[in-house]
Amino acid sequence: MAAKQKNVIVTCAVTGSIHTPSMSPYLPVTPDQICNEALGAAAAGASVVHLHVRNPETGQPIQDVDLFRQFLPRIQRESDIVVNITTGGAPTMLVEERLQPVLKLKPEVASLNMGSMNFGLYPMLDRFKTFKHDWERPYLEGSEDRVFRNTFKDIRYILESCSSNDTKFEIECYDIGHLYTAAHFLDRGILKGPLLIQSVFGLLGGIGPHPEDVHHMKRTADRLFGEDYYWSVLGAGRNQMPIATMAATMGGNVRVGIEDSLWIGAGKLAESNADQVRKIVTILDELGLKPATPDETRSMLGLKGRNAVSFA
Image (cartoon, rainbow, N blue to C red; front, side, top):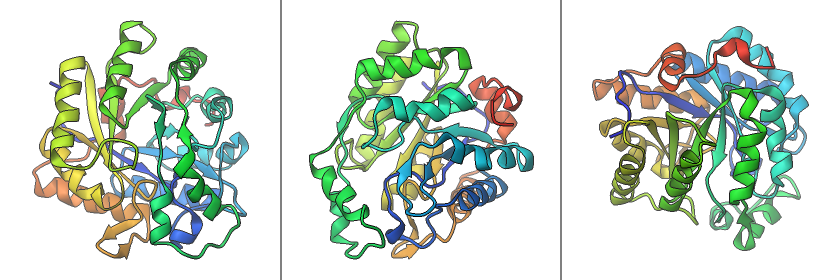
């Protein structure tokens, strides 16, 4: 069984690399927009904010450390939320590029993908026909023949490069085999418990969003990690709230945010990340559960603390 916990960790993923600016006018792109969305999510009840950055002019995903530096100090000043920075970046990036923000900024938490996979974004072209920027359509089309590379060597490189940072990794598992990869690095002593396992459902190329898939992921993680892990989930697109609700009833933690889904309901775009956070907090309340505070989250995950980062 996953580690026992009192309250539910709510992570908000603010902008990501999956969606393009043409898909929603509410997708945050500039440093100020990303910052405001993160602070809004914190006020709405999230205890962790997961962050990417984008080219402020075109919205294209990039891993520019200086762009992170434009807003991370303000988030630190105006909230006590736990900052989680991506090492995933985008599937088009090399691992050395993806690593730089975490390596230099030393956040409390960073995401880490546990395996190479097909990462199919091209079905979005069935819904979205016109685009503002030249890069958007080729980016989606190219995903039909694109592998998101995360080899054993890549994973080890990230873990060992950041070992002195004392950063906790959010272990992103898009399929069952990724859990076994996490167990492999745990056995080698390169990963340290308790693990934060983020199970990802509903992206083309990974495990599906069926309830049996959710249960299978949880059962396998329980068997591999016992009580030495915390389990969280994210559902892509329309799967976001149903899978978050299901996981909460199973003792899990949840991730929402515009990175994972542009929607707040059937056919209705979320106007902010805070909209999605407020919705899941309301659902948790109806289930008799409460969101963990940032300090409760730090205690549960054994984080190094907000004063030990390199962007304050």
